[in-house]
Length: 335
Image (cartoon, rainbow, N blue to C red; front, side, top):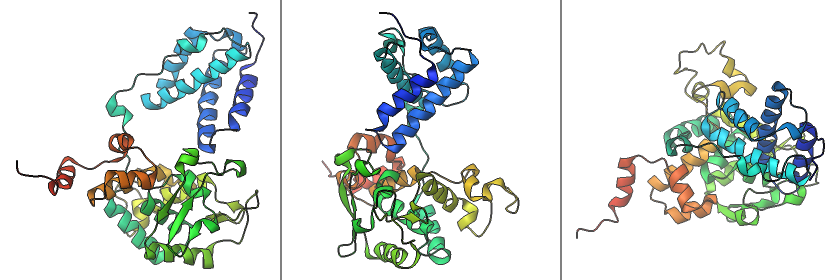
């Protein structure tokens, strides 16, 4: 089979266009980011035709990537690259079978497990501050929902006004890919998440007093909204990074010795630079850990956050050895 001249940029655009129709925004972003790095590497190597990409170049790319990211990130990138190369085979841009020579980066079990977590006490302090100084704001409601439910960002963004059931109360998470809010697990991620009345009252006050009266580009009424429509994923991230900066909720004291008048992380879009701030996913881990420590059964917790038991235990339950021992205490029998 004769290979066709194919610029890497063109191949990337065709690949992403094909993927965009059936993957979530987050997955699409990850694919795009990984392939941007690949194209940067190929540019540095003066490679402007996919026909010149062979297994040796792909091994060099892995080594190049490991100079700037952790092995777990490199492994994910190499998986995307392998899938991309397989697509390139289908359009006759590279030899058939090349993707089989792309071996994902080896990762130790310790590297595979992320320990980024918001503790129950930290969450309590943050929510107390927000309840007092930013009551029913977008940041308050964003933080409150993520902590109290452990849901993913995609699930939070997918919520419409009509998905907030004030009678039970509950949030109804639904998969709507045709109107730009797919769930990571698609229809398997659909569920109703019950709320306590205190949480529901804050959301209700947000809807009544704070939320902009807008619709998104698909004519839907998002629960979390900005003046432009449905709140963006990046806005959710920035709000959580800001809310979880220690100086935000501890009276303005920096535990890292920074000047709280001039620190770069004080800016809303730079809050992620604070070593004490955490991502939204840390609230998901924190919720799972706190729920399990409180005695909530594993299957109940897993169903609530849409997570399998093995994944929950390995990646999300960050209880210490003594906390896990205490959980088992009431179930022990003297035999």
